[in-house]
Amino acid sequence: MYIEKNLMVPMEDGIRLATDVYRPEAEGRYPVLVARTPYDKSGMAAGVAPYAEAGYIVVVQDVRGRFASEGDFLPYAHEADDGNSLMTWIFSRNWCDGNIGTFGGSYLGGTQWLLAKNDPPGLKTMIPEITFDDLYAGCMYQGGAKVLHDLRWTVASIIPEGARRACEAGGAADPDLPEVETALHEIPLATHPAFEKYGAYYRQWLAHYVMSEYWARHSPNAAYQSVMVPALHISGWYDIFVPSTLKNYAGMKERGGSEQARRHQRLIMGPWTHMNFSGEFPEISYGEASSDAAVGLTQIKIDWFDRWLKAEGKQASDALPVKIFVMGANTWRDEADWPLPDTQYRSLYLHSKGSANTLHGDGWLSEEKPGDEPSDSYVYDPMNPCPTMGGQVILPGENAMGPRDQREAEERGDVLVYSTPAFETPVEVTGSVQLKLFVSSDCLDTDFTAKISDVFPDGRSMLLSDGILRARYRESFETLRLLKPGEICELTIEIGATSNLFLSGHHLRLDISSSNFPKYNRNSNTGGEIARETAEKYKTALNRVFHDAERTSRLILPVINR
Image (cartoon, rainbow, N blue to C red; front, side, top):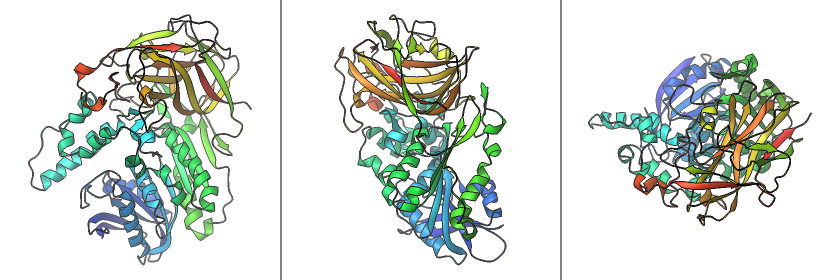
């Protein structure tokens, strides 16, 4: 390859962004692939190589205010305009043949969506991986609760570079950069001093805790109708953006801005986390076929680009558009669409004799509706929250992400546990999972959390997916309605999506609690602005779950019978 480093490309306002160009040695015009990153473009050289070898020019840019680029970094604010400026610059180069694609994951996926809504010159396709659909409900506030992966991101990935740039500009070195673990436990979070110097935007995120235009202007799902190109969507069942990826695929099929865009969306979901595409985890392995290398993910992406950016690839026939990995069966499967067209929704009703607390309690799940049954109750103490144990998270620590045994959490008295009997024949659950829950609390606000797991014959309760609902958002994320203490209300909790075959002898388990920390911030139970409340204001809550003939709390499963 012939590499040009740190070309300073001007944006509309004159700010220049550092850009690397990887070109084949042979002169000529080539299709171009683009990635825009806040994580230092110099670290992407290894990932660029397969594309360059496949006959592409690759352009990688540090976004505004990061590493070698000029300007100030404000997440997402400039990505649409700056992305459009870069695309216009590329399209005018004598080495660009007029066909441009974009690639990259997480924030890099967001930069693709935001530039695509401008329909820039030359853009023919994109591959957004592990990224969001809605910046509020799909990223920052899931179920209305503050998701803290963005705090980890701010402290670990953004603040250190901001401090380096400030020092380079003549400021004193800062010896007191925050640690992730310390920041996650900060009360009140909004007054953390680190945000004053290097992460002021995070205080804005905390202040905008209701869905609004503030979030919509940077959300892909607000602009599907403006995106004109086919896209290959990639994620994993343990990624933080599982629902987002599925919604981006379905949303573009329904509302994409061109017939070509609506017809040609593709989806791949593996047994992966946001950072681990191996299919191998400390407590479980999904087999030799589960890794990105085994499925040939790099070649799949190259083939996709070939189809849309090279003349010889245009006539490639359409395969089935959805490829999923079914855990438990540990196999890949091609499908006609998402949700799977033959999905059958089955309700499992909650039952107990009033003592479903802990895995040793008397809670169970069955297809039989409940009769005259007592409610289950527990005390939620925000100063002693139920700990996050794996799942769709990005948290510090070994074995912090992905499938984890939940038995330690299920020993707690503030966790209600409901399990099916052992399955006599295998049962496949593939799709989005939902919980209808009748509850009450003695507080003005509280959270209700839900987890589903696959319980193995040896007792392991392996987490599949989880969800949360902050009760004040039970009617809408755009308005707040506090609880009336003691009043029973119905909640709908989205528990994400999964694809898992429950083998014979396994159980399906549902855990209900009021905290999953530090994946989500703790609810103070006061009904106030949690990010600004001191610990002295936090209250304990007595929360109840009802399951009787009038209040049929139930888990709604997407079952595949074949």
